[in-house]
Image (cartoon, rainbow, N blue to C red; front, side, top):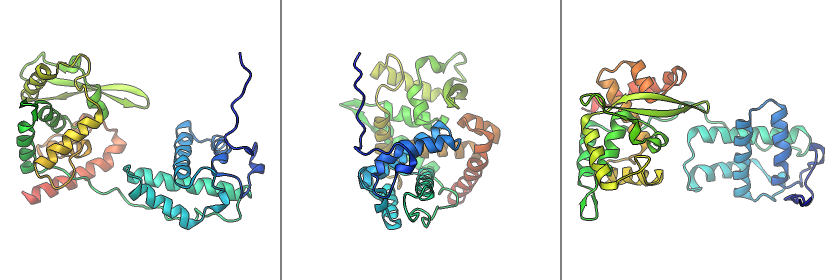
Length: 311
């Protein structure tokens, strides 16, 4: 066996917090910061997320940038890049966590005397609930279905778009859940009330929930199967391709906002609420905890009232 060891990324990598100073490269501080977080009792998930956020800062400003070169203005420019220029969606939740990462990181550096001032202290943390999602109105649902039904695969009708749209409309399942669906998850024991078994992850443990689907969707699934012949999971393409299909349906149906898994999930919840489904039943159908339902249920009611006022 070779006793060669991996060379450090930075020649003067500090071995302790006391060796960090304003000239220390940003990337050279990550290991010691992770050790600090662990000593503070942070979970492995939090440590991993914070370091990933700092690697984004290193991607923006270069890992060899001295920590003393970071100013409040530069950090705000980084946050603007994350939100508007990086080209990757930055949710309100992710943005808030990244602000927290900057505040904890630079407060630590200031606290151990590595930098004279804390550039992250003046950064404002946004508060308030995330904005409401878009949902499809009955008219938009009809238009989307009609367009999905017209989409083609070569010279023949492509059954995948309408099957996907109908599945999401009826079940509100997440993208990851859709990608895991197999034919064994379709329960046809009662032809009048077919169901699907959805596996969802809760604290790294997969649980199951059973959701009613229509005979119409099962018929579309059979047409799709004869066309695509999937061997394992129902969807043989990537999740990104499914996103493209939804986008194409939305654009083809002249939907004024981007059609996505999130929009379909909210639309399903609102439709069920307007149809009189019990709130606990909706919560269980969407695979939500009672704690998360408090906010989600409130938003569903607001969105439902908006749909009613527009009709």
